[in-house]
Length: 108
Image (tube, rainbow, N blue to C red; front, side, top):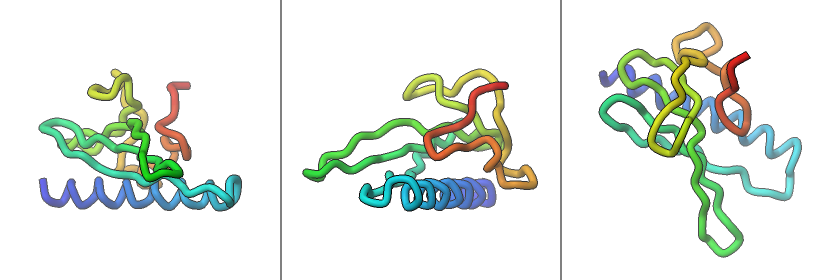
């Protein structure tokens, strides 16, 4: 389980790098959101937190990662993932093909 947590942290770090790059290129005057992780019993919730001008922040769910298998899910609600797997953190690209700067991809 400790190894999987480390892989989930690595995935979140890659997502943060992608978001930072996107904001640097597209919105250079804005501060990119921060990617956070909250571990639950079954899923790790990946949270995107955007700080406002007065310090207050907005949070939204970026996606979920199954804490036992590494499968990546799009968020259905704040508390639950959508039904279908969108990728894996163990894929050759580290799961990045299932990500955009705004969240996990829709099913094709």
